[in-house]
Image 1 (cartoon, rainbow, N blue to C red):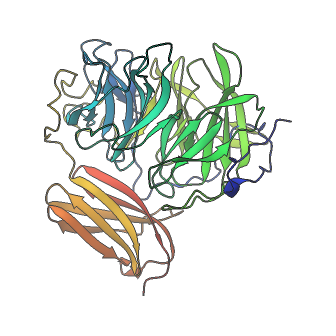
Image 2 (cartoon, rainbow, N blue to C red; image 1 turned 180 degrees about the horizontal axis):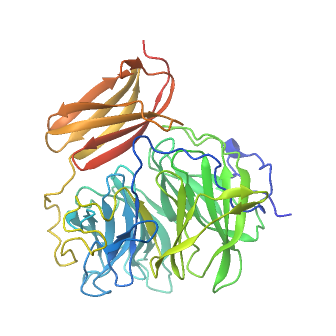
Image 3 (tube, rainbow, N blue to C red; image 1 turned 45 degrees about the vertical axis):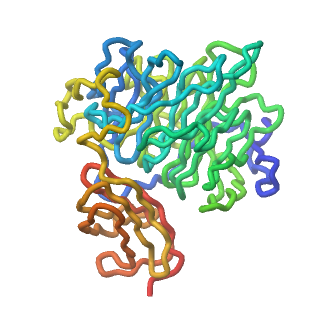
Length: 470
């Protein structure tokens, strides 16, 4: 029997897992759908030509978002936010070794950027190769190889640096850099946090952004190494991608799913996760480049991962005894190695320049991006968005770049249907509104998902009402 999963050495998670680490992957039996009408989500990835591309999850429609002149002039490390914006790095670096990223719309238009990502160190530093953009679009967590100022046999250090997405890149010291952290991802539930892997430990970022706290760790002597993970968007469920602890070359990876204790919110340390293994599956992908990096769809009904053959999509696995049944389909041959879910339909006729089954997009490439900080006609209306618990419900605190009409969709946690939609007219600047009722009914104690839309952009927020409104 394999050794159990353990929590990190910190006292607040020093408990044992009640099941061994050997079972196969599981997926939650009941999945919570996002409130409102069904969403036509898509997959975003880098195609074989080095372009950012998008596709329907069944692979029936695939189109380029960008049109690079060559692979070397293409893109890498894409990630997507809740407003559908795509963060992507240009493959080419400048003469000093600095990298550049842009923020693209679904049509390929440059919304923001290019922004500079300065190299770190004189010797051994390599360009970024993975990103994770926060759901609200504020931050980009960039995984890269950090160089050294000593050129005498020093080796680069894996690191994750935090930068802002919406303004010109500040000094590298403005936001924290986490050495030896890899595979950055953002939690959505119950609030927005950065997580990553440090050795055999899954660590979670606290809201003060100064450190990563150990949360779940593989046991000492485990036959596996932690290669990837993803948190369910609405439930306390966690996917783990495990590779063999020893050996090189193409090797089978194992997918496991755990349930865990509700995570704390705000500045408090994460609660004891008390992870419970639900099930797992062996050999779901064979890879020598870090596993499949499985990722939940935005409503939790599907998962996607990349393998040597391309991108696979499967319905949420169904437990069958100790094994979880997957139904994977190779939907994008040759696509990958990173894949993200995006809140738009690739064949949406409202997408400028796009036609069903066509290439879509505008003539976007590394040479067509506007200068740093230049405004774009498709720039989002949002500058900031928060939902804060208030005595009589919760308060929306929004900041807009221009006057706009705001729609607010409120869904109680666990519900499939939204409570209702509120509409407001907001001026440019700060907008605050305390919400205590929806359709004449007072909000009761509990957690709510709040989707705020303005123009073509949106923000998904989570808030807890601690007492009934009076």
